[in-house]
Image 1 (cartoon, rainbow, N blue to C red):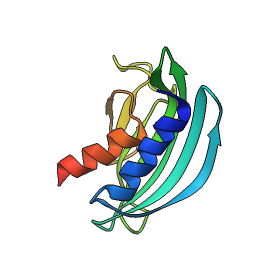
Image 2 (image 1 turned 90 degrees about the vertical axis):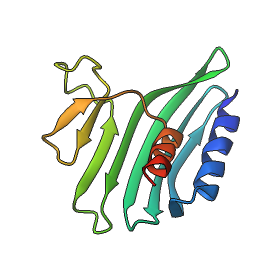
Image 3 (image 1 turned 180 degrees about the vertical axis):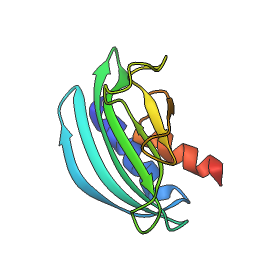
Image 4 (image 1 turned 120 degrees about the horizontal axis):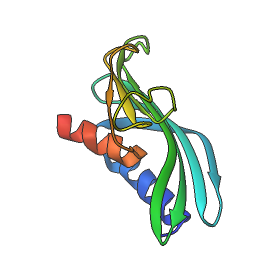
Length: 126
């Protein structure tokens, strides 16, 4: 896989997912072996996502190096979840991957999450 293909697959899911009403690209950067995408997504349940990922292509595979996916209610004031890998919870066994679940102070272990992983998660929540 190359960076262009990864972005194309991400856009395809954003376009076809039943949970996505619309999305806006805030920023996109693309190189031969890396990329950055930041999008804002309106969800069908009146929720909102602010999502960003920086990825690299290593041995023909996508590796998400930095990410922050912020899921809120439609007023954009109530946090539902935020997946990120900011390096501020070294006490967690999955450091730096973690989830703010329902509030900033409720932090639990997580795994690396690409934009497509979050969309699939929301589809599965149905």
